Structure formats: C-alpha cells, structure tokens
Amino acid sequence: MARMISDGAIGVVKATVPAIEAHGLAITQRMYERMFANPDIRDLFNQSNQGDTGSQPRALAAAILAYAQNIENLGALTQAVERIAQRHVGLNILPEHYPYVAEALLGAIRDVLGEAATPQILDAWGEAYWFLADILIGREKEIYGEHQAAPGGWAGWRDLVVTEKRRESDVVTSFVLKAADGGRVMRHKPGQHLTFWLDIPGRAALKRNYSISSAPNDDFYRISVKREPMGVASGWLHEEAGVGTVLKTAAPAGEFVAPVSLERPLVLVSGGIGVTPLISMLAALAPEKPEHPVQFVHAAISGATHALGAEAKAIARDSGGTVRVTTFYETPREHDVLGEAYDEKGRVTGEWLAAHTPLAAADYYLCGPRPFLRALAGELRHHGVPSAQIRYEFFGPTDEALAA
Image (cartoon, rainbow, N blue to C red; front, side, top):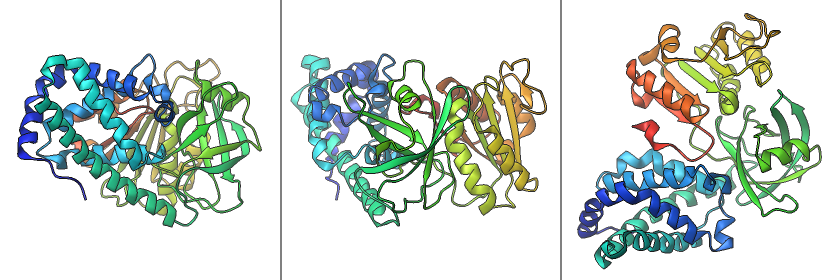
C-alpha cells in the first residue's frame, strides 16, 4: 500500500512548481550524474537515452513538473504511471533500486537550488517521491506476477535464440527469436516491445528496446531493427548477430498496445521504423476483427528504406477490403513505381488525413520520429480529433509536449 503524503507536503510541492519549471532539466541532469556514479545502477538503464540529445533528462523533467502540477489529481497521471511502470518492468527495476533514485533526486534538488532547497522543501519532495514510488512498485509487482503466471511467461531475463535473420530494406533487418530452452513464449500485446541485455565484446552491457513486429503467437517473436548511423547495438545486430546468437531478453512490456475493444474505425500511421509496432497491431487485428475498418498509412523515404510493405499489402488483400494501405515516399527513386511501390509522393500531412480518414469518428495510433509525431498529433487535434482518440509512441523517452 502506498505511503500517504501530508497536506503540508502537498502544499510545499505545489509551491515549488515555478522552481521546477525554471530548473527541472538541470535537476534531472544532475540526478542522473549522481545516480550513474554507481555502475550497478547505471547498467540498469538504456544509456543511449542519456547521450548528446539528453532525451531522458528532458522527459523526466517534464514528468516531475507534471507530477508537481497534478499532485492533488493523480488520476490525470494514470497513463504516465502505467508507461513508467512498463518501462521499469522491461528493465527489471526492483524495489531495492528505488532508494538510490530517491537519494539522487533529493541530492540533485539540493545541488541545483542551493540554499533555496530548504529542509522543508526536501522533506516534502521526499514524501512526494515515496508516495509515487510505492504506487509504481505496487503496479510493477502486479506486472511481474502477470508475466510469471502467463503461459510461456517469465520474470527477469530469459535466453532467446535467433532462428532467422532477414533483410527487409537497406537499413532494416528482421530477427526471429525463439526460446533457447525450447519452450513456448508469452503472447505479447500487439504494440509491445522486448528489452534486451546485450553483452557486446569490448563494451559495457547495453540495454535496448525493440518493438515486436510479428502478430502474437506462442512460438516466436520477430523484431525488425533499423541500423542507426552511430548505433552500437543496431550495428552489432546487423553485422554480428546471426542464426544461433543468444540474446538475453525481458518479457514483452509497454502500454502502447492495440485497443481491446474497437469502437471506431482505426487509423494506424507510421513513419520509418515506427512501422514495427503498428504492423504487429495490423497483423493481429485484421484476422481477429475482419469486419472492422482499418487504415494503414506508412511514410518512408523511398523503396530503399521501406520495410514490411509487402506484408502490409498482403494483409490488406486478405482482408476483403476492410484494410486499406497507403504508402508515402518522400523522395522516391527512379525505379520506385507510383501505384505499385507507393501511393503518394511527399509526406503524410494533417490535410491529407483530414481528406482521407474519418477524423473525430476514428481512433489514431501514431508511431515514428518525434517531429513526425509532433506535427501529426497537433494537426489531428486542430482538425477536431479528441486527444483521447490519439495514441502515439516513438523510440525513446516520452516527449510530454506531444500531449499538450
């Protein structure tokens, strides 16, 4: 049961909102510096989110600000809490790790705010931290239990072996993974990801998340990985991993999942490698809900980078007309044939979606690069789509500004 937070602490936390608005990023940057001084804690996290882009500190600063602003209305943060809990489960964060975070956060507040960080402020934020931490610990315990109880499920790390490696485009390669012990695997929810603990020779252990691009089943997972120009993990997978490679893997996690009940037409919009969770949703929903209309809109640079397009078209052909696929190429090659390889030249825009999709009558699931999502989410809202009918995911910490 979560510890309670006193009315006095709530008042103090609310009073610190201006300071968090002004100094939140500096606080979270300092927090990670303090926390990652302990290599055992550092290795729990995906360090690619801590690099030059600083995406994780920015996302955490936004989350802390939202918490302070809504500390008397935590119902507004339900989705954010679930997202954090799912991420933590993928990384195998345990209750014993939380005190390290508490020390790092309170120490960072003290370091950044200096004399302004009075004992009253530090005590109030200590209460607020442990109140939220207990909620997260409780939810994470539930998820771990669900994973262990599920057929083919597991908690902690499990060895999966690559049984097939297939090139999907110039930059994307798929890996089919089965349990190394020969057992079944837990059926994932379409849209979820796997977290991998990669032991690459000559480097510290790496944690990476890759969306599952196959439909749920008991036998295997498929991930489709884009090779990033400076990506250590993606480069190793493309160059070194092959059939027989064993990967240490956490159970499927993530809250960006296909709807259980379909109340409205569904529009799945992806950019680049954002296709992976959405093709899993499409592959699952099309046979399960054959009468339900689904539009699958994908944007790629050209045929050179377009992955899983033939699979999407095959699902559409088998649907009898309820699934429609539209593909955009931004700069098609000379031999990319309009009407065959792709359907529209240029980028997906809100104007195009307004003209070709049901807008407020539909649910939208978006996945892709941050600028792609920011533009489309904003344009859909501009055209009258309620925020509750727009779900999104990109590969990295959540950009809270998208939800504004």
